[in-house]
Image (cartoon, rainbow, N blue to C red):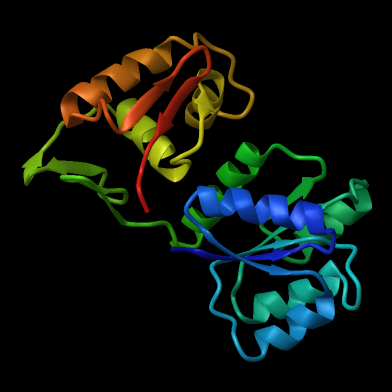
Length: 220
C-alpha cells in the first residue's frame, strides 16, 4: 500500500483528502504544519508521494519541497495560490505537478497515478479473487490461464482497481481512459464493462450503479 504525505493546514480539507485516499487504497499520513513535517522527515521518510500545500504554519511549501527532494519523495502541490509566478516557481523548483484549489478528487487521483508511474512506484501485481493482473507486463491470468483483453479493456479494468469501492460515472471512466477533456459516447464504457465481466466472471465484482455508472467492490 502506497504511503502518501498529506500536508495541509486546513482540517476539513486534510480530512477529505485522507478519506478519499483511503477509499482509493492508499495509506495517507496527515500533517498540518511545515515544521512538524520537517522534524518528522528526519526520523521517517519512507513515503511514495507528498501532497503539499504552500501556505502552511512554520515552514512553507516552497521550503519543504527542498527537504522532500532530498529524500526523493515526489511532490504534487495542492494550493490556493493560482498565480502564474507561484506555479512557475513550484514546477521549476522540482514539483511533479501543481493543482489549484478547488479541485476534483478524481483528477487528483489520476495525476497521482501518473507521478507514481514516472517514479516506478505503481503496483506491479494485482490479485482479485482468482484473477492476477500484472500492470507492467499487461497480462491477466484467471486460475492460471491467460485471458486475452483488448488494450482499452485492460485500461478500464485498471481504472476500476485504482478507484475501487468508489462510484464512477461513465464520463469519469472515459476521461481516465482518454484524457481529462475527452468528450465521447459514454455507452462505450458499457461495452468494455460487459466484456470484462464476461471474460473474468466479474458480475459480482464490477457492480452497476443505476443511472450513475459502476463500482468495483473489493473487500480490503
